[in-house]
Image (cartoon, rainbow, N blue to C red; front, side):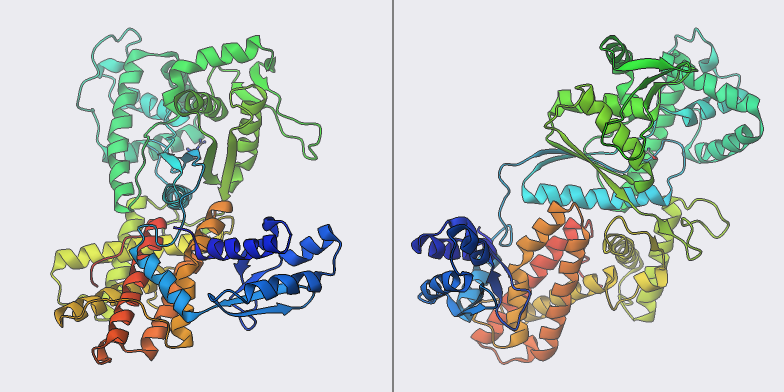
Length: 589
Ligand code: ARG
């Protein structure tokens, strides 16, 4: 259905037209002066320029016309020609009634829908995930859900780091530890057996060990380089091992992401491009884009208007290995072939911004990406520890995702116990509620600031049941569920929405009608923090409303039924927005 803002825009545009002006001047926005009106239209100022008229006079004509319309309780002119609008409570109530019956909660589906790919997650196979990967997953998941809700065709791709030096490190270390395995034979032609000769726990130990050794011993590093090169050249035994490393790691990653309510449509990675790399490199050379420089093969990506020199994009290193940028280019080629996307979002640490500038330019100038394909790097800031440095474990190591999930779950349990929450539920339900609260804690804290902001991981603050936190929002949603449950037990059902009975109730109505603005702002800026603001404001308004109007203590009446209706829409809205943030709501807590 049409959003309230667009319905009002239609009406005001009509008024402009009846006065002989262009409809485009009738755009209505939420008012930034609530004391003057709920909505405003500033188009008269621009129209006055075009029609060479006095803006106040022009606006007055439109105001006179709008005053005839019974949906407005007030239409006024302010300043140099602003039109302020307030709709009647009856109109608001009818609009809310429509929202409550609408699957999209009063928001419109986009048209035309874009074909989109959100590249996020970016975990590196066999290397521990770090907090940067966590942020990529959280932000990307939300952007994917938002775009999908709006009606775009979206695929989420995890784009694993599974083709780089770390693979060679593990392979060469396995060769040292388990030389009896058949895979190291250059002529290995055997099968890729089902069972891997190692577990995820082994892998988690092997990588840090060998990377430490490689730091101190050039021979170890050289062996790893060699193995990487051989792997990329198609060494079958190494490839069999690689497949095992991939399978074991992906199974583990899926479980971690799943615990965070994060899902990918595509489990592709850098390795997915291996077949197309030689052809791509050859073509770039043949067409004169790629040239040799100090033994390496590079593509220039500088443009005359650059103020800062952007180094060339390196395709092949002097040792023959391909790089991160090469697989990124090939990935673009593959996505264009398979999906013809209009828009690709890369949700990756902002420290990689030069890399993406190189890749996007490289892809556009060489024709790998059509000019119409928009590629955007959503470069996010760092989650820091209290020392202001990227978040680490107490021992100073990288925090594994599993440990982080455990930590936030423990914190949630601790807070639940302190607040006497869920104490009568059985242990498994308590654990599940704690997991959901923990994930909400982490995600809301991550998403509530603009993604470019660095922030300090302060679990005590994030886990509070008050203020701008995930737990507060869940608590509000669950409280509404409990009101509706208790009402149902007393045989009370939500009924028709009546015009608001107080200012705070009217404010809740208006906030609910504002959902499409939050969606638009979030999508236009690719910034979920607008959804966080919206969810938090709605939850606080509802809480205030509920303090003033004790729904269940009201005597049974149409008013009470209307309030139950309002509670129901508010809950649906909160759950919907939380879902767009990737946050689940428990049934009770
Ligand atoms: N694996 C990379 C890293 O850990 C992130 C991948 C991001 N996506 C991409 N298409 N480059 O930094």
